[in-house]
Image 1 (cartoon, one colour):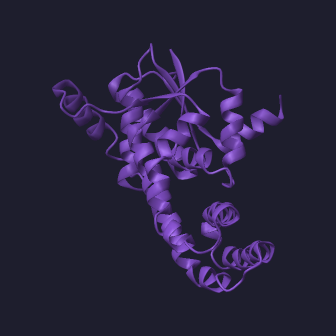
Image 2 (cartoon, one colour):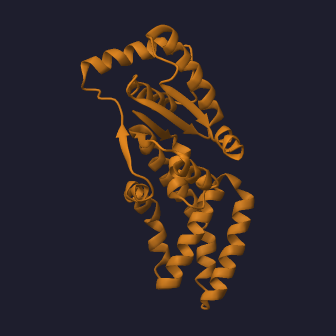
Image 3 (tube, one colour):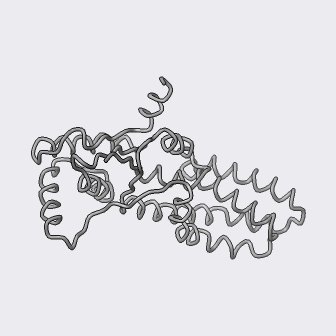
Length: 239
């Protein structure tokens, strides 16, 4: 059976509609006719990154929160928030997606409940985001989770073979390696996966590692297709 899957950055983009990749992620879903499977490690990493970046965005905006507490007019609060957050985004573009997410949440909260308990709300925001992450993801797309059963001796043996086979390929970090392993563990002539990513390095390293599996462990080239979002969008524009 054919499936499609997402890398970490695209999973986060699904949940955060302010993310620059949100539209691309949604386009993939709308144009895919297969069922979705997500790697257990990719979901875990998505939640970890979301928690860390939201917490950073909140910490960087504390001075803004203190300043707006002096303002009584809600319309003026929103205006000042947007102005201040634009400055934050220019100062730290890497957090732009999360500043936009945070700004929206603050405006929603202040509109409903006022400014008084905003600091308490923000102090719990990153943890609340992680706690509801999979629930929100499930509202957007139905998916099954795939992974590796480390209690299974056969799978541990295969993992050892895979590690030895792809040892020449140096993935960017340990999590990229785990995601790749979870993907290849769930491949066969009955289970084919299209894997979408916005990470050019993962695309390159993943394809190189899979070519070694084809050469040394009899994997078939049709079992895994790694698709960069740029390639997907280009093919979409030609339809």
